[in-house]
Image 1 (cartoon, protein in one colour):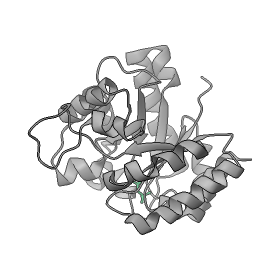
Image 2 (cartoon, helix red, strand yellow):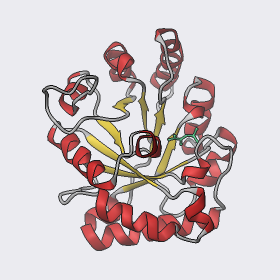
Image 3 (cartoon, helix red, strand yellow):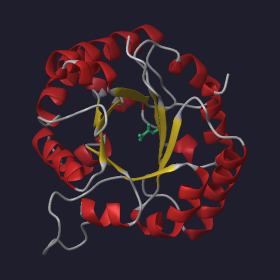
Image 4 (tube, rainbow, N blue to C red):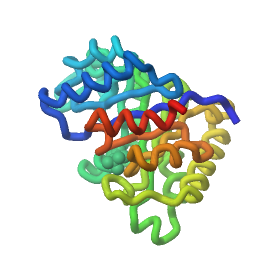
Length: 252
Ligand code: PEP
């Protein structure tokens, strides 16, 4: 198995006023004092906070990411943000294809692939989200769905450097529900096999994050599953204490 440095990334979604920067400052101060040696750490706050927190992040070793991007560099796209604009803030990554974007904005695999390509164009790492719905799981379609999403959302040219895959069962997001360790092992194993089949050595080294109700209390168990190379964390990334508790899974 390839030696992969894990990533713990926090997705703040549509949360975080300027007052919430205090939580980011707490995370940054703790990590500056006591760096997370075992994993990279990233927060993806809303666009409105990116510029303001970039320097704090750079000083602490934390990475900064965004939650979505347009496919174009610039132009008449009211309300959208380009990958180049994101890179201009100092951020180094962007989440694409999160299930909430797929659902709220009807984003399909093809657009997700275009967004990943656009992210690379701007020098950003694309964190490509995939995962089955509750109904698909009930019909035993998980592996089929995930395989199709990878096939269609992962553009040619993906490397372990420019891409991270986040497996997030939709039914586990924000619900407190988590798949069994065996199910996570099976899905991540299938994803690894597919990535290695498409990309060879790059696929062997590509990070595959698990996301969906990760908390300090379950992080250690989930992060020790084969082919789980870190976490994408929603709710529990909003508070410094919780997020740092998850990062602790990589301290011992
Ligand atoms: C997410 O939305 O990416 C996520 C994993 O959310 P939560 O941790 O709250 O389930």
